[in-house]
Image (cartoon, rainbow, N blue to C red; front, side, top):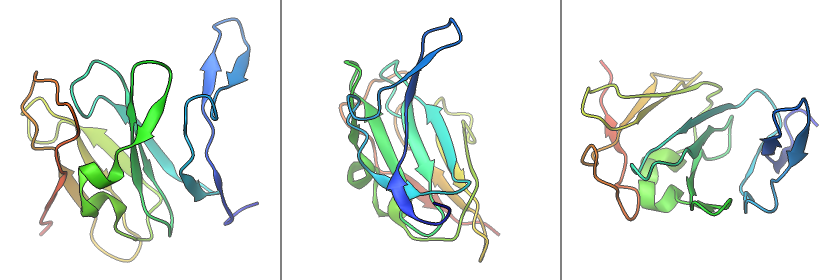
Length: 139
């Protein structure tokens, strides 16, 4: 299975040592590469719910928005072309890099410099959709 494109998985934790696969019910249908990819869950649109950002090896990265009803939708195109850029990356980190209250993304690249994606949203303001993540030059 390593290196093949497959669907990811999302498991609901029942807090009693058991989990249930809720991938299909959640609408998570974007394929990813079956190896050590990176996932960041943070609230990218200030809606109070964790969105999912996935860094893939040689397939496009993607961002899934939490709709609040147990389902997610692919918000990659809303987030802008930089999130979907193909790169050989196996690492991804999420955090407020610019101290502006918005979650930004760093995608590691085995073939070059890391990609920093700045979230230009307004901190504390829920966004109906994701603002486009803006690439930041890395020296």
